[in-house]
Image (cartoon, rainbow, N blue to C red; front, side, top):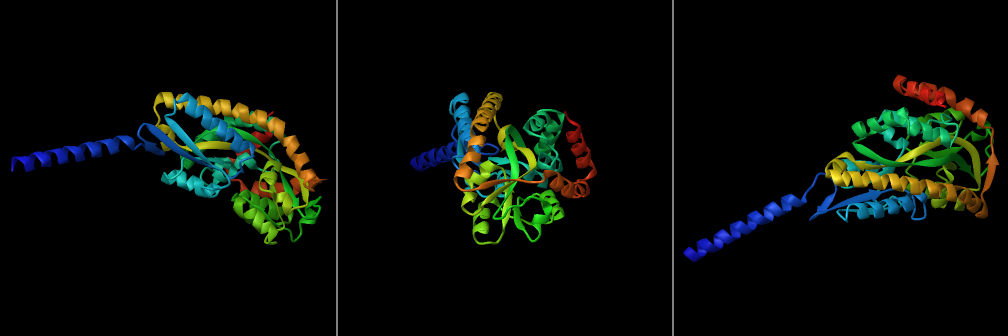
Length: 334
């Protein structure tokens, strides 16, 4: 009888220790293995893209600065799902990091200003805005309403329209079916310009073009290349309708679960990764245009003023008063 009680006591103690141990390893956000926090980082670009190369640098820096207490696994090519899917997964706790831009307006309306057509003059204008008060205002709303903390950003090459015929003015868009990302404003401005836009995830664009579901799409040259769209499109029409930036984000819960030293290390890694990404951008974008020409794509100059004039009424009609006020501030920023 005493032996039975003794064994029962050992079993109970063992179960208690097991329960305590498992409780210690669970943290808000991410997946924790003992003392190591595991983050899943998903994005839409391929392994040769600037975003992915910079993400690898960020991963390396975080591991180094936290002595391996944070382990980041990166999933390119939408392998965790599309941008919207990954954001939803972060919010539900099954993913942790994402690269996202104007799509964030579906949660945080001010994020629409990250990619309003013809709002930004050039990349210097973009940097001034994103690093100033307007950028801080947009970031604060993303954190509050989307549940995501911006860590660093990339400026983007201007968005251009691709097609299998030259498109030099809005008159050439009649009957032209094109893909746009899940950004309501993009739908409206391209409708106003005369096209037939439809929302489609980027990972569906190549097949959509190949099968004739759409006639064209619009993106910066780096994504045109990484998506191999040169295989199914002949022209890059230099509409340059959007200069913008894109954030690398982590879930608020995931970031808030870190201790102070880990938070500091992640922020330092983010600042260094951003500088690294800027250096890559300066080296690679001009070469990417040459590569696309080498693949047979022709760059076409267009009447940008005509596209701007066609889109402005839709911009004014689409933006809510708070958004329009921010839009005017951007236009006035020197």
